[in-house]
Length: 178
Image 1: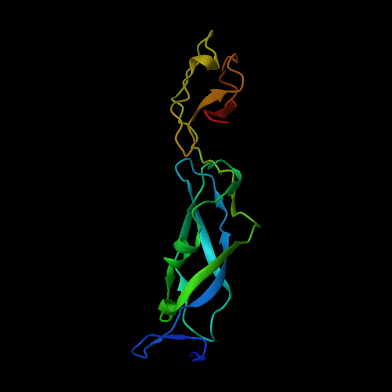
Image 2: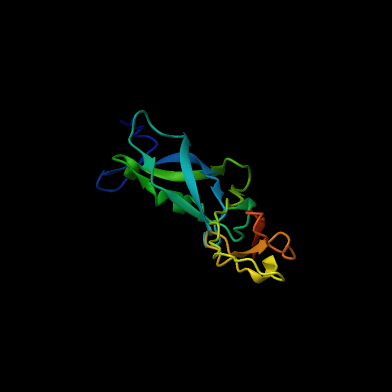
């Protein structure tokens, strides 16, 4: 697969030919993701941009970088170095290559787009309410909120006196962390 110029390669005193690994250049791209309070990582794909010979089999397994701020927004990704990328190089011909340069799809630094999370909250189950003359919705428990976001259910207007004629009263979910 390779052509060699014996005038430009090195041979030791026993006339053994030393073949250097072929240098490749790669581009790293971080895959955007949704916010997760416990996730400080970023999945990164690697694309060979220069140096691969013909149809040599070189690929990269998942490369993971880190973010120090995991809130929604554009966040800098660390840990995507030549050594980190090279450690994830696989394929039949991978041993013949070295990573000489890593560039980033987002410019001089690598960034990941972290989007706001889409919360999911279940509707609370309200126990049967029986008419009481001075009872207000504030006296009626909405129960526990269950879902991906911490918070509580609250009546939109807790001062309303529930009546037999009305069968619906509005409640809203208030997240603990807005």
